[in-house]
Amino acid sequence: MEASIFHMGHWSSPSAGFSAFGEQRHVLQHRFNVSVSLSGRTTQSLLGRTGFLVPKRNYNKVLCNLNQEAPVLEARSVDEIYDALAERLLPTAARIRDPYSKYIVGLAGPPGAGKSTVAFEVVSRVNKLWPQKASTVDNKVEPPDVAVVLPMDGFHLYRSQLDAMENPKEAHARRGAPWTFDPARLLRCLNTLRAQGSVYVPSFDHGVGDPVEDDIFVSLQHEIVIVEGNYLFLDDGIWKEVSSVFDEKWFLEVDIDTAMQRVLKRHISTGKAPDIAKWRIEYNDRPNAELIMKSKGSADIVIRSVDM
Image (cartoon, rainbow, N blue to C red; front, side, top):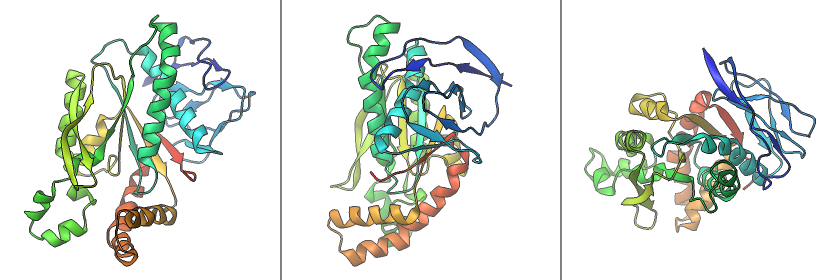
């Protein structure tokens, strides 16, 4: 089996744009374990199974580790991670010409890993850099945004649906576990996006505690869609079908104790008493995080979380 590989050219800085596009190449498609030191002397190395070569750069940035099933993206700061991921997606956006086509990235990780922050920061950078890319490729002066975030939070079951379960008290206590979401609806939305090029999806109102219908619109202009959520890569039931939709899978890895400290602060900031927050973490959040960490093996890139 062969995969198309694109040499992405050189960067002079994160905002300088691309100076060249390379020719299409072909290599055997495998899981490549790579080690990359982006110090200006490094040449090309493979990142994952999706078919990109790491561009040469003239500044230090990220490292990809050896001895991992999937390449590991590490950096000295979160900004370097955001920049590297945005740079990875820009060539894909430039190649898409069909408004119905979408490049859908799944971003998974445990609670407290920083998925929402990473997704929105990467999308912001892609949209900021896109006018330079579009003016080079499409001769557009002010092209619209090409990237958008689709959060999985909107696919929580409603509180009324939890109330209707056999054990409502347990259902509410375990809210955030896989069975308190509606993966079938998420799958339908992703399939609609593939087939029609646009879709309305729900968001989640944390103040009310329920989804908000049709609150997010992924339009024809959006070429890159980052779907972020906890259970996107589970190899079980409908979740497995959801996982199969993604063109590329990113897993945000974090020490579970660190993640739970972040979640504890989040619970307390929303008004929960410290003892109730700690109980919820041990009863619900930590077991969920341990389950999610087991899905890391299906990722194309593992992103090593640093202090947000």
